Image (tube, rainbow, N blue to C red; front, side, top):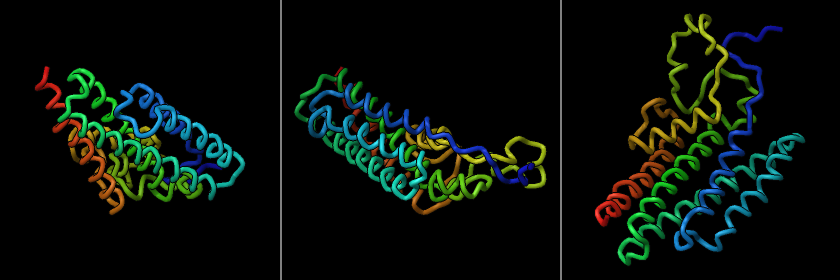
Length: 219
């Protein structure tokens, strides 16, 4: 049976989100010990421990548990990011880190900021990936992606007529907001997305403007 226009039937892949969490784990193992809250192994271990039941619960259809675990793991990585940024700020006046290490650490935390908020946008848009897959609706309820701006009567001529965002689309939104300190590719529609974007941009500004600029000045 052919799907009606404006719908999409393919399941939303989860592998990219899993790889994003693993990337956060690797980044934290690469950070200086002074910029990590708790033992350096704690966050990567928690991520791995939580990822296993998160993936399993999705596979067996326990979507409520999957959603709860998703919020928990997202929340933990967000708190770890904020804690590391605070430690980076505190490290500046005491010159406990060399300028080169501060630059490297700032870059790693900036990248973590992009990934963490890309995961939040993916997790929350339209009720989450599970609900988006179930409803099979075109586009997004929280972001105005370029594909959604094509006139409805012209969508039949494009492959995007059956389009909905994937994790890479939310990651790109997070990347552009951390790079330009504002939405560019996909304007924000939902209030929760605007609040999260303000938090993300604030963290990015802290890292780029205050921290990395001071580290460059010390070279």
